[in-house]
Image 1 (cartoon, rainbow, N blue to C red):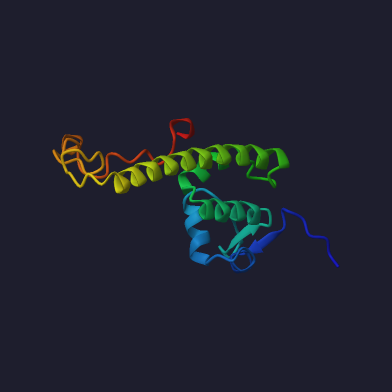
Image 2 (cartoon, one colour; image 1 turned 120 degrees about the vertical axis):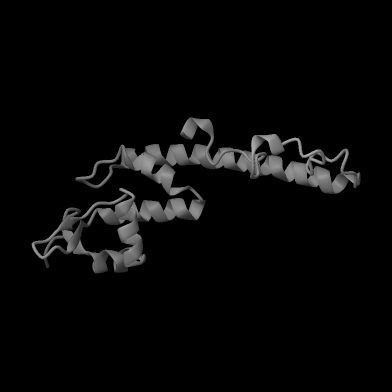
Length: 156
């Protein structure tokens, strides 16, 4: 039995099957610069086996609601020619744990506002903090301007 290495080349179909993602997703990730491939003499894509680790991290981030733009930021510091080290993964984990903690605090604040609004019984558009009766935010432009930015400042 031959020994497998992280730099062995896999076809797009093999990577798709092993990672559990569509071939179109692999092409999209490559277009976004998240993964890379090599081309054969016949112009077919080949991925190094260690790209499966990157794809796994993309899928974990997706499950946690972390945007691909954040994945791209952390991938900038990862080596392209080898599998990321344990230290690389620990650094990413700490960063994303802080991001998730900030999101948790934002959700708790929203829950408090929601509970306060439903529980207040005011039913008054003049006094309700949530409804914004004078439309004072209109001058800031369209959209949900009270929502926090997608990422806390320390992650931009």
